Image (cartoon, rainbow, N blue to C red; front, side, top):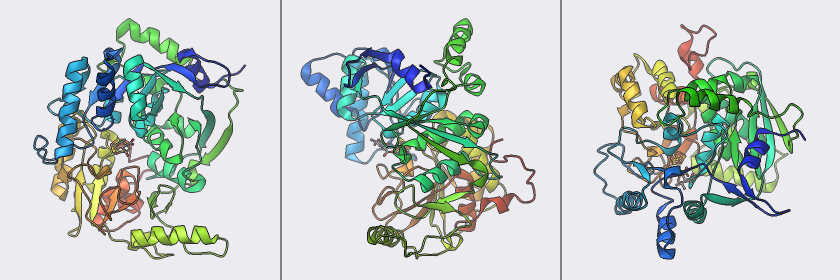
Length: 477
Ligand SMILES: CC(C)[C@H](C(=O)O)[C@@H](O)C(=O)O
Ligand code: SF4
């Protein structure tokens, strides 16, 4: 029978499978961070169990660390979680990229960067955006804390095989349109439940043309479309990215692996439970206006109005979102002023994101009413950006240049948006209170965030580039 890449990875990792029951999956890589691991280790300790494969675990700290004066942690819960992770890793022999490490960073940024994330692997982490690693053709998904304990103890996980959704993206995307815009457009059209119970395989010419970093952005947000995971079958772009990375197979071993990885694709006549077609040419730079990632619209569009077609329930949901966001029905997004700009998070904090934003910012100044920060996804991204002089571009414009971490993506560290204030954010979630109590989050691409920082309001980034526009993706140099 024809198989999808998901079937292939699944079958290869199934240790045990009884009819109509969850299967037992072998896990190749277990990523850990400070927030969702303490109880799991405590559980092990209580039962006096060792970690079965410490060599397949890899830890970092990212969520609640400060991005300024990173060694001064005032919050007692954050400090406790960080120290607990250090102790646990030491006690159980797990590799940790701590605050002092040059390889520290957001867990979903450093996995790929260090060559830990590889095609065909099963990868888990107590974190929903583990889907990011799917960009390499890995089956990667978030797990709960009790499952973290199970994986630590057994290196396996009970899983019901998910359904499969193919999202086929074709068409040449327009100038200034990024992977972030395409996934936001998909979620705006099909909703935050589109992928519920499914793993998404992203296919199509547009996806093939994406860099690995763009594929990561796409897979990162598949979770925001409700999916369990998202993946892209590996190809030359993938192998090229992996080659030479610290923990990737080297030399002859790499060549061998590449042969194996090349077979990792869906058979031509493989069946999916659902198929969605997206035309990338129809997507424009997106901005979310509401309190979930599906509440978004192209920059030339408006905040929605009430219509006769809406049910009472839909009207109430719209009203609630607009009230929280401090917006009026029908309002143009280009009139909406922002007070904060955040360029960072596991969605958009890689070197190509920073280059793209810097290109928009270069030679301009951040609007006087805006506080803007750039938070590289890892310390390695930070170093690379500094070698290229990007930090100077940002600093000269008035951006704050920080150390890596989750930062303003979520209100778990000192980078908070004050109540009632508005942030153009390159992160992935815009739920109520996500960036702080009463904070108003608008999800955008790095280019759009950079443009908003300069104008002090949302604006179409495409106009910033009119002089130098050459039909190429300026965003991805
Ligand atoms: C803290 C963690 C459990 C959480 C997640 O699972 O995604 C966080 O990373 C997030 O983005 O909301
Ligand atoms: S950057 Fe944001 S979305 Fe990503 S892991 Fe951290 S908190 Fe979660």
